[in-house]
Picture (cartoon, rainbow, N blue to C red):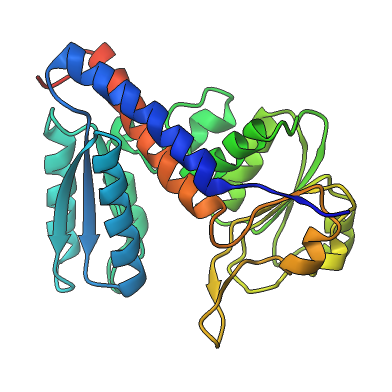
Length: 290
């Protein structure tokens, strides 16, 4: 068996094209483009690459990109002042605070300060809670990208046994909620899991999100399973690899995402989709800011 490689770049391009159509519709109705404010504190090299990609993708999708690049020395109070200002600005539809924040900054305090209606990352407890209650609004971008990619490749998640490897607030936990919403039977594995191998081996769907290169051996993958590799890790020789041992997994799986070119592009595409969703929802509530 040789897995179907799920082309995240191609599907992300399709999503961005859909977003651009909706952004033009918004501009036609309300006289301005949807606007996304991106806040970066410091110059973390990886963060700078991500932010640059997000801003370029925003412009391509006809979303106004508003840059707030703050120095490493910015205090928590100053960051919060900016966030509160963006919350109040009627012409800002989405707010993205790039992580990680510098040492000494309480990430939870900053992220919780973002207006849930503008939380296009989908990280705010309000949006996570709504997802848990089967009332999704702005959905966490990487898990949402997994769901969209599965749909594009005709993977019917209902009834499948899904194992999520990793329980972070950014990917693992909301991924479990998304899979529950899709009516999969879900197991979440974490540092307290006693037999990770057996949990992965019985899974029809595996989502790996631990941030460790090759953490999931390829021969653990059930024949025909769908494998979504969220990890992006750089090896000693500079190669980008995922959390799953790719070659062996691809020989057994039914579908698999590559790294790079899988969920990375999908995450940015779903961020843009959330940004337009936020704009339309705010406009419907009387906050178009024209």
